[in-house]
Each structure stands twice: as C-alpha cells, then as structure tokens.
Length: 295
Image (cartoon, rainbow, N blue to C red; front, side, top):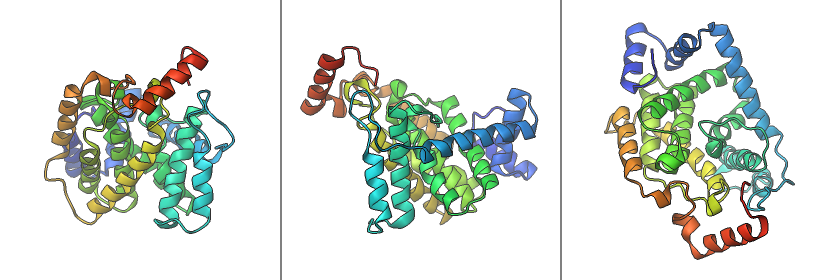
C-alpha cells in the first residue's frame, strides 16, 4: 500500500493485526520489489551509517565557512561532567544532535532523515539508547516506524525547507523521532501517530532562515531542539495524551502554513535570523572572503 495516509496505515494495522513498522516494511517490499530480508539489511546498513555519523564525529573539524564545528565536542564534555540540568540521556541527545549536524556541515557522511539539514534528530534520540543497551533489531523497527511517518508527510506536504520552511525539515524529523521513541517505549500504532502529530504541532510554522543560505546557523542547533520536542511528545503519547486534531489533518495544516509562508522564510537567507544585522554582516563577510558560498 502507498504510504500517503496515517488513517489508512492505522486501518491496516487494525484490520490485519500488524504493528505500524510491519505495514511500512510491507510497503517498502512492494515498492522496491525486494524481500523482507533485503529490506531489513538495507535498513541495517542505514542505521549503521547513522550510528557511525555520531561515533566518528571529529570536534576539531570546522566547516569551510567557519560557522560550524566544535560545539558537539563542547556539549559532549559538558554531558560527561555529570552536571547537565536534564541528566545523562538528555545531555547525550543534545550532544549527538550537534555532533551529527556538524559532521554534515563539515562534509562527513550522514543519513538524511529526512534531509541533510535535519540529519541529527533521529540519531540524537536513538544512538544514546543503543549505547544503553537497546537491541539493534528494535532500533531497526523504530526506523521503519519513523520512515512511515516521514513518507506520509512527504506525500501530503513536503520535506523541503525551500518549499515551506524548517517545519518541513526539523518538524518532520522531530515527528519521525517521536514516533520511533514511542514505538521503543511500547506505544501502539495509535500512540505512535499521535506522538508524531504532537511534534508537528509543536514546530508548526518554524521558518527556514539560514545565514548566508548555508545550512549551519541556526540549522544545526535546531536539530537538538527538534530532538527535545520528539522526546516530550513521545512521552505525552505514551501517557495516553492524544492530539485533538487527527494526524492527517495536522499534516495538511502543516502544508497550508508552508504554502502561505513568505519566500524570505523559505531557505533564501533573507528573513528571520539571516535577515538580522548580524546575520547580514556575517553573510557579507563570507561572500567577500569566499565569493560563491557552498559550505
């Protein structure tokens, strides 16, 4: 079945007594005409690349523009000190989000989930759990769960910041991560979908305003914020809290907001943070130093 409706996925789960991730697995098998085993092995390779993007982080690297690099290492050290306000797991989530986001900025290998600019959100919530003993097979099922949410959003709205703001990138990544966490927390298909809906609503209208048009500032740190929203919404859904508006309608609201968003707030580097005096100054300095900017 095509993954273009949360309601249809939930109906399939109910009618056929399947888990959310199983419906997504079946859709992948059908679309790519591969075996379930081959699908799982591709997802395993994806997960291991995602894990490596966190584990191979180099705090000494800087992006060509000099706008990013090193913050992940600062957060790692702070987290290791044991004084982080949110405790061990939360501080590791923040550190991992920054590390992976900076790895992308420094042209290292990452997994776009759903995009390169939002690549830090899913590993941020999953890698620390894996380090704490979460089984790889369960991580893979969580990734199928996340992929299903991302596929529906892409079908009904978009995952491109240029199309409708950062709500489409960090917002989608946060919804995917919330769904994955909810699955790992024992949530059923309904809870998973509501976790995603709650995350989307929390980031609805988030603009895409990178300084100089580069996916650095404020993009990387938004990965950490998106991961925090995912954790909050997963816990709310696991507690039995539900979105008053059905998930498919939340996604359509997301599209409506994106369609109405001014072009200056859609990855053009003109509005928002990019349009501040400091943002404009940084962009001008980079253009003077490097000419055409690409990193």
